[in-house]
Image 1 (cartoon, one colour):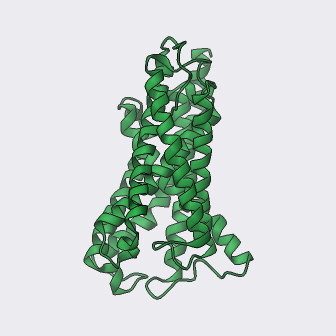
Image 2: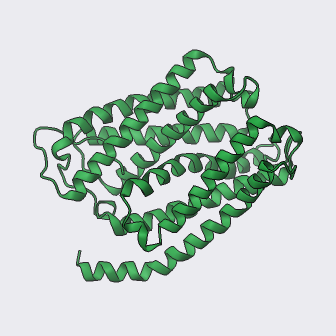
Image 3: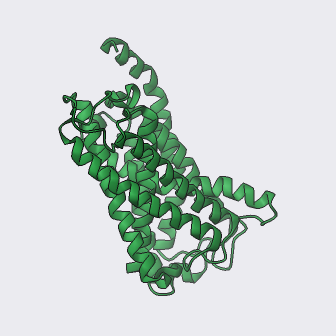
Length: 327
């Protein structure tokens, strides 16, 4: 592609990226303000139990995550955003993808299906939280998922040519064999995760007991993302080219499996026995979750290596099929 034409295209899209940044920051504010109120002990929309010490720590952590989302949104358009090491922006964006996409789809699509099928309003509230809080929180998550991903795609297409053009026909590079091993580990982890989530969606679990339709959709979305990522990784392991579509599926699949496993591991280890059903999971599921966590991280590392090789224009490795990539 002509560099001058590419620069002009980037200039034309910059105003859109700025508007996306502003909209993202605005969409983060209601959630951030709610969390700030709860941290300081103000019972806005919740009962006193939500302000217990354990939940206060969780509120501080999630408020920090929302501040990180704002920082990412600014970094996607600020001049310093292209000068910092890619991992400092890509890694938190990858984590945000894994956290937000299942929640966004589960809350919007799952909530709609629940109403249509007679399951009631998913945002009607409960004994601990008023309905409008659910609407603000999950509506904000859905909006942030769309805006952050849109802003990151526009940022990535300017910074990494592979995102738009795809990779070479045999672009594993010098680390192709290692990428293959990491990819195989991810495929195994993704298959385990897919089965686990589907079992929970149908029969429930200690954490997901008495499931609503929206919760079932949330679990199915996670399983679908993992399965799609595994399919994309399998194609690369068989020597297929790294296309933008495969890259998207790998990004989403590794992100969803990693963040879900990380969240479940932290819940299992850190929360009180009764808090959010945290310690109710049996050791077998805990071991599987840890395996998924490590496998998805291996997959993400493999994808990052692949993108680094592709972006640097390394000579292809002829004696090894392509590996599992993401960045």
